Length: 128
Image (cartoon, rainbow, N blue to C red; front, side, top):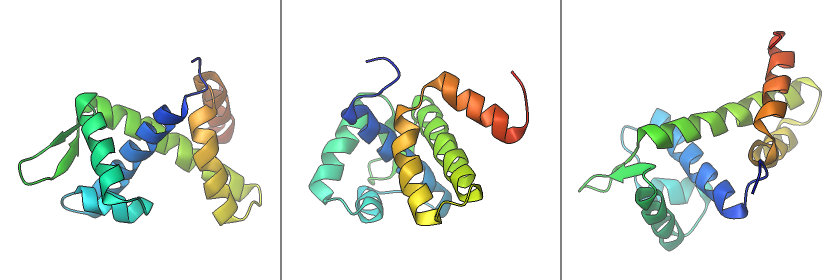
């Protein structure tokens, strides 16, 4: 698979990133919140949550509240960092914010760790 992820891995990252973002806005995150945020059907989100739970990325309480595990939080945070850094950079370069956000969402899944680190170092003015 290399650094270019399979479509299902992109979906995993998108769901985890959404859970992370929602957990910063809401006291508790439920499947319906994720469905509403992503404009996906409740059954699709239910299947995805079962997959994430089976992979050890989330836990679901008896009340239906969704929480990221350590592994889930690490992957969500890395995805969110790539998304925010790339989208902000594109906006600073003069790209329309809506286009920058959409492009960053595609780039965040396909960029290699090496290339992302180089871009991050460049943006932040640091050297490796």
